[in-house]
Amino acid sequence: NVVIHSTSKYMDGHACAIGGVIVDGGNFDWSVFPEFSQPNASYHGVVYSEQFGNAAYIAKARTMLLRDFGAVPGPYNAFFLNLGLETLHLRMERHCQNAMEVSRYLQSKLGGDVCFVHYPGLSSDPDYPLAKKYLKNEQGVFIGASGVVSFGVAGGRERAAQWMDALKLAAIVVHVADARISVLHPASTTHRQLTDEQLSDCGITPELIRLSVGIESASDIIEDLEQALNASR
Image 1 (cartoon, rainbow, N blue to C red):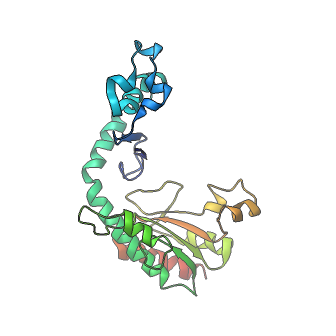
Image 2 (cartoon, rainbow, N blue to C red):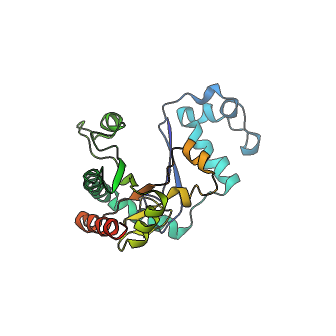
Image 3 (cartoon, rainbow, N blue to C red):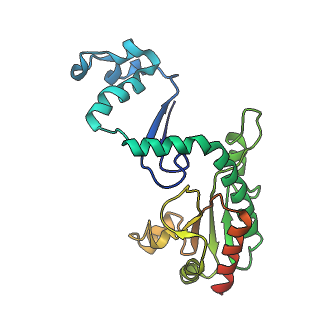
């Protein structure tokens, strides 16, 4: 019924704007909640469920909550987001295509430089059935599974660090969903405050790498990953 997006990811697409968006399907009966079915004293006594029907939630978000939280994007953030939205459909096709090629390349390295690969677009991935079910166009055709791929560098944390240091094209940042390829080692960055036991409980292994595959040439991306694997042996 309600979907929340971070617009600083694929929607912006270039890591230059911060924002978020709420999408209300307008198909839920909000009158069962007092917050929407009782008069709002701070906004002229309006009863959102009576005044706006199934749009009660988004109406309250755009009036009272927007007023109270001040969650208004700056003009440049709005401008950059608008530019990004114009090419979103084109970029997503390329992100998905490149991620599929990269994941297949990494899959070819299993048993050697790579110990596991996770990408919902791969038929061998446990989430592939869900990806095929939900990630399809109006004609019911599977359209891709985003640009995020995770894999494990054989050799653990030390080799993962060496591999990242050897990269030339990819940026080492915590951001995701950029037009440019970026990589992240979760165990030593986003989750560095956790103990080894806690990391294990979260499913974050020492060798885990998260790739945010960009829209560069897929062959250039794969060449960079390959040379880094060779350099880290």
